[in-house]
Image (tube, rainbow, N blue to C red; front, top):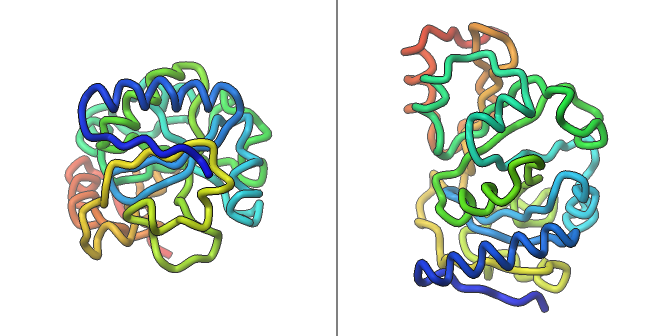
Length: 219
């Protein structure tokens, strides 16, 4: 079984970041808390391991964790103002942009776009800072097609034996919104947004987008 590191103090977080970064550099997969649900992550170059872990179809793309807006601009073609990004991030949203040439062609090869997150979660933010030149691939910590989203490490116990490290921050706030995961917004076309998934932050996200003059895409 994968070792479990609990986050109960700042020293715990510091040690866990160091250990998780070491495992990622060595090609491993970790489970980690976000601001919505628990996820699984590895470096982009090892993302095939996540597909095998979750029995996930390759036509379902993975997302990225990045450390800051500079990395978003590096790995995607941003279509909105920095001030808008600063209002949405860090936060429980996934922003979809066209991928840039800096992102490996082997990552999500079936799509020109990429979904990017900066969760409002201290551990994840510190971990991504360890990788300024390579983003971290991520998705939910469950088997593909599983209806329930994991809010604690016991929710994905069936994956433990296939992981290299589990970061336990305790149960994520138990509310229906969190079960819905992050709000996913497609911003790949300048001047408009397309709500892909309501998630847990739909209303405030849409309000912010409209405040900045973006128009919702009409089907």
